[in-house]
Length: 321
Image (cartoon, rainbow, N blue to C red; front, top):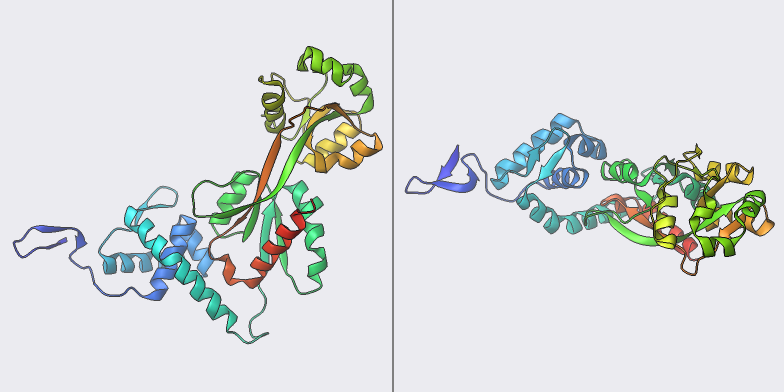
């Protein structure tokens, strides 16, 4: 039941068992983990607690503040407006406190924690891992994962990764994101297919219909990169079905070099093949489509100093990419 004013009326937003006073610091840490991850289960994994413990702590905090903090949903929880306000007030101080307490430990007293880093497979293999390789001998522990941006960002929020390289800026303000690299897209094929198109001049004169009948190789059935190229360069919708799909752009590259058909690839991925003549750029627009990749960090991951180290190393390396 709710508290009552002296006249017997209910006090909005406060329950009868509310316990005023300063909230316990551990409860606030758990609250922040739930708010950031979007579920009690994910917060429990982040904190090394059981899910019932997290639930009990949130009930205790709700009793202390006299307000409902989270709406329980079929999958996860949704924060109340009061919870959003509380998180905005405590996130920076709690992160700073965690960082300070972590740095006061004597060197070697606590084993170094691995950095969990994820991103698209080709970016991880061709850019990220080579950029970090020299630091492994210095004691950097790295756990790499690959995948598509949306699932990886969901896993980042759930605490499975510390950093994610995303092909789009994440929505909302809960995740910190900085631009990392630009990808320029190239329409390309093996030389014998290029000869069949009649060259860039014919495409410029007659449009992309010149490519009709050439097999399209792509990494997904919905042709995301090719559709974007068509829209940006030709100003029209791509009406084509993929001949081959490979869920890795390195596989797409290998198939196109072998003569399977044409495709659209990031230039960094195929620049060696273009330079050697193994691939030909079918059309070179004055304004090629460009996509920005972002380095996204999970709130609270700064407690591991290696995360900041990897972040700065990648930002520095990206200047040369």
